[in-house]
Length: 485
Ligand code: SF4
Image 1 (cartoon, rainbow, N blue to C red):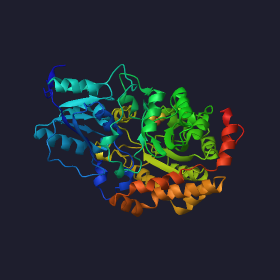
Image 2 (cartoon, protein in one colour):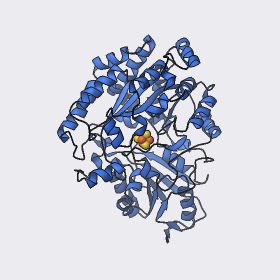
Image 3 (cartoon, rainbow, N blue to C red):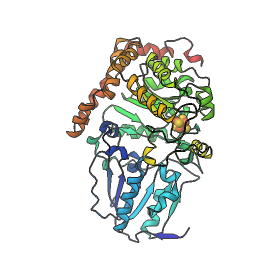
Image 4 (spheres, helix red, strand yellow):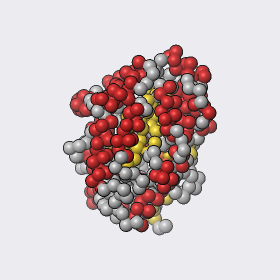
């Protein structure tokens, strides 16, 4: 491809990285705490490829004011589907001032032609290899219009993430960390296959490098933002071995089958795992098959919750509504199951066919896409025609599920399902803290006191019972049979 420009200069660059706010961040329904959780690690990771004498700035539009009166040499904007329109407006603004604008991220990879009219350069797929290549071209005045990630992907030997560019005081969880890229599974509704097409879809850091990054993070609490922390069992096992003496406590995400298989989850608990995001998604075998979610088929979801509960690990269960086999009962059944099984927090989604996914291709081919307003692709709106439900029933059922699950009665019922008093109390504190204390979070954010909440979070995530958990970890599980799966 012909080169299109850049800045032929040996001197330092002024680079601005922007994470635009999701559209909803400006709406009256916006929950500030939801967007004050994690810093933009992806941008900080790209920034690590700059030279020490370059000037770099990261602006997270969700948590800080964005000054657009400046004119950096290079503006790098991360685009998700629901921030796309704002990202494009910012890109247009900076280009009109003569700045060179780069766009990348999930949405750009899914719809490059849409994004191209707003950018000087696009990054398709992960930027770990292509961004340093681009920087070299840019400095030479020979940047191409498009950089596509393909073979040879790796995150081994990457320079340390530029955490010095992140204002930790603005986030509840500044110690977020990513030690893998992608996921070994291939669910039809997931962005992952489109984003990683043309090369490896799942790869890991070196264990010693991951441990070194953990060592660099202050305090005790960590949040692994990896799509599937247990996806490579050898890597995860070695990582947890290395973490065992570090006195950390951490949260992460994994699949149903990875919780049930072998004793990796016990190792994780021993290393400090205290809460896990689990993608249950649907109870219908038909739905699971249709969305290629094979890893959940014929798995005992109840056993997943018991196993995690026995290890003192709290559960954030993810559930999708509106798949083709869902009828009007799905909402109440799902909430009742989650409450009865002690799920700590639940994330409900209205099925959303993201562009670039196999789900989008199927629903579009069936003529069932009803909206192409990307602002509505936030898993809270219905953007397609469901099969066994009306769009109104789906939206109303989704809203009711949230209301019911987070009613005081159901928070109490779910908390009471755990065997130990401490786990009951932790469950209550975590669920209520997340959904019932909005005004307190708002005050903490406005007064820049989020960091003072970290000890509270660490207390809620503390070990359930030293003696009880140690017995569990020594024997593998309190419940005979859990290891048989
Ligand atoms: S398991 Fe999760 S991250 Fe992996 S492909 Fe499925 S939805 Fe995506």
